[in-house]
Length: 78
Image 1 (cartoon, rainbow, N blue to C red):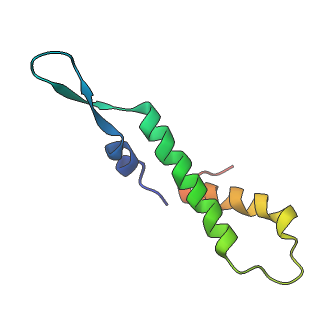
Image 2 (cartoon, rainbow, N blue to C red; image 1 turned 180 degrees about the horizontal axis):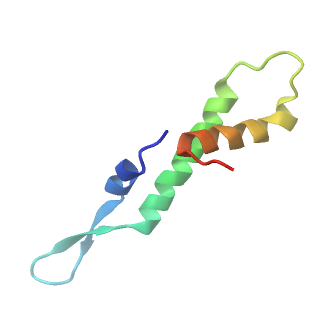
């Protein structure tokens, strides 16, 4: 399961304040969202790279497998 605190820490960016002191460290919602999307893509790539048992229709089952992988990765229960 992913550590969201780690993603939050990676979402801190420096913003130019326009003042003499220069820059301020802020939390970027955009960066946080980007990192979450990247994690989701990684989950789907993991599913794609897994060997598929014979007789399983990857086209029909791939989406569901990807959804389950993302839920598990983020610790989301129904």
